Length: 431
Ligand code: GDP
Ligand code: IMO
Ligand code: MG
Image (cartoon, rainbow, N blue to C red; front, side, top):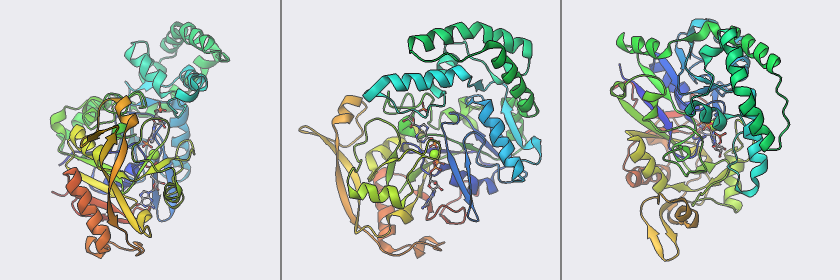
């Protein structure tokens, strides 16, 4: 049975959650492999909205397993809250549905405090992080001083690790001029309690996943953030602290890359970005404001207004390359209805130079402005359109031009937030 990776092809918030929720009907297991609760994945089913930050977007399907892999940084406070909320609504009735890797790193209170304090001090050059402690937790992981889920399950070990780590965290907070509200005994007591709460889910997730794949189950890997936020391949340093590209689905869950059969990139029919960093096709005018209002472009995690702009074919072609995309899922096509014309960035210009491909140098990219190709818009309401041929001719022409510019076929088109409002042209699980 096929194993499929779904990643964001832009700067995050492309509608990954919606697509993962929909395709879960054809998969057995859904895996988050990187990021943490900086993610906000929105699912709308029958008009009812669910926003998930940490638990995979397959959780609304009873009987389907959801795995939080080793590559995720998990805030156990958020995880427990999310579990409680789902249970209150009747989901996750069977604890066996959720698998939490022993090796996922834990976001501790000091990680959050350091993240917020750094951003407060950074002024104009700040990254615009979500303030959830993501960067500092990955730093500790790489520095080999992090705490993992397994450390929460043994109180003596937890106490030892907190004692070891706390002086360094305190020093850092002091240097940042931030308040130190960390009480060692209280931290140990609280995180031991959280450890007891997550214990029913904690497992050797890589082994669990291996066995699932061996037994013929289909796995859907759910990316968080987007390609241009990847710590290696994104617009560094205006990125998140993990690898968001498809290749990390293997590392972040402990399976081999040969288990992956296909990779789908999700893109909006236009573009958005939250936080700082270069964005050549950004619109700061009334058109950008209209995209923000019609598209409801306010962050699912922080509520911040998202920056908006036209679609960027250079960025998408780059995403197609670094992820090895087999197909594109284009979301929010309905938002473009009523624009007299729609544009796609096809080149960049900086000084006297033009670029056909996205420049890898940040300072060059910062100087770039987009050169657009303009296509005619459409006025038809896309509500209820369930077949590709129902779409207005100009909307189809837009999608076909996009596919040609990116060199990747369109496999799904989303025309509304609800699970049902999706046109699947080719289902990666039904090949
Ligand atoms: P994710 O982080 O990639 O899962 O995306 P988010 O959930 O942060 O943001 C996508 C937003 O667009 C959510 O509010 C979704 O409910 C909404 N959405 C997804 N697909 C569509 C669509 O086709 N049309 C419209 N109008 N909204 C959509
Ligand atoms: P989903 O999964 C959009 C952005 C932040 C900031 C940068 C670094 O919902 O698509 P971090 O807190 O990760 O250190 O912030 O990354 N960012 C996102 N933008 N969608 C997300 O997730 C994001 N997660 C992080 O705004 O610019
Ligand atoms: Mg989001």
